[in-house]
Length: 304
Image (cartoon, rainbow, N blue to C red; front, side, top):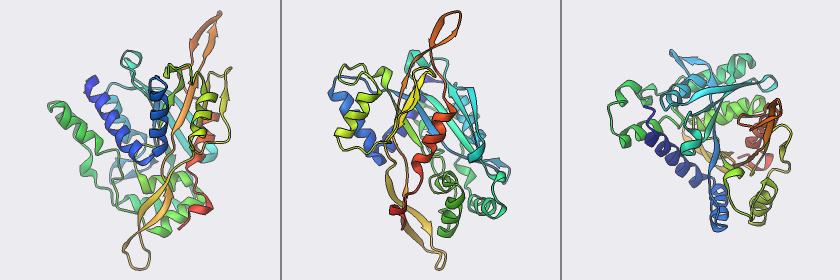
């Protein structure tokens, strides 16, 4: 299923769904387009829960089977011990030729959390509807549109809405975990690739951030990384939207405000790999990522 058409169409459909929810991404798209530039994605990020339920691994392997069927392969791994997170990034062998984004998939190591919190998570995801996961071998025989539609369904929340008190309890220990309970495998963020913008008006990450700020987009205060390490990143603030949870007392579905996603900006630089040879840095920096994980932290002002 490594068909390039399937891969590009899938990422496009996920972009359409994501950008409809994250208005800042559309502001960026319009800003770069109006400047005669190119909008390209450096990478797409997804979150998951590293645990097994009913024989299904809900962590990185849940999405890895799909991205590998599209031709991607793991190219690096990262450990964030203080956040109980592990991540891998993936690249496609035809990444440059077809302008395909890298993928960054992380997982929360649930068994490292306090017992009462891990149990809240287990209880919530035990309602998973595993039937939405496609039979990848059977999809090989289908046409592009059907394959894309089937794969798109995976990038959502496959379990029932969580109980409100469970989300709030988990959030006190791991905002990442609460986010996944609410949003599942929905895109965590897309990333504008500064190197491909190809416009004199926004030649680097600083001018890009300035342009977004001037258009009223709330931005992260800092730009993470340096030229020396090969990667500089920043992001918009996360959008807040109404999410569905189950009321503890009545059991009815209610809506409360919670963070969804942000839009990231990345610029890559040449790094020396020995004997004076330089290549464009094509991986990720753990220290940068650890700060960006915090962008979906729920602020006191958005609690319902």
